[in-house]
Image (cartoon, rainbow, N blue to C red; front, side, top):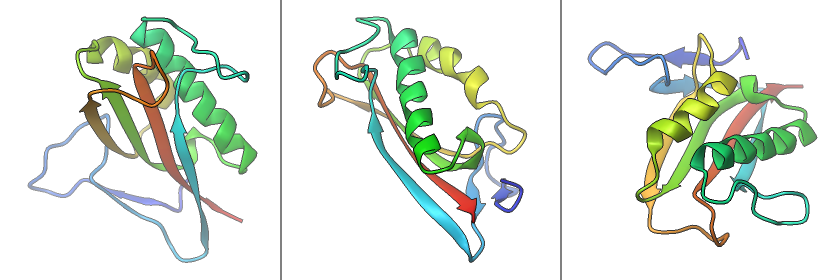
Length: 133
């Protein structure tokens, strides 16, 4: 993902967890990964009421989707992370932070929501990635 330019402009907060702007050059292929929950291949919820376990499984599912398109976590330009209101955000982020660690972190949009489409799901992640073909 060396071809993507990550910017952390002066005047905006500096964080090791995210960048503010990403510039993808012409010629890159954009990959969109739809919302991934903590479900197995049969659609059964994994992790019960454990937001850390659900976070890891949702991210693993996103990794499977990215791989199907020839991409990896390193190719992600932006993550969108939805949490059900009231979950322990520190536990969720703590569980997935090692999987996402990078010197050039992607953009991140996080939001608390009243509920998700999968009954019992506590987190949903989606991604936009870019690769050079």
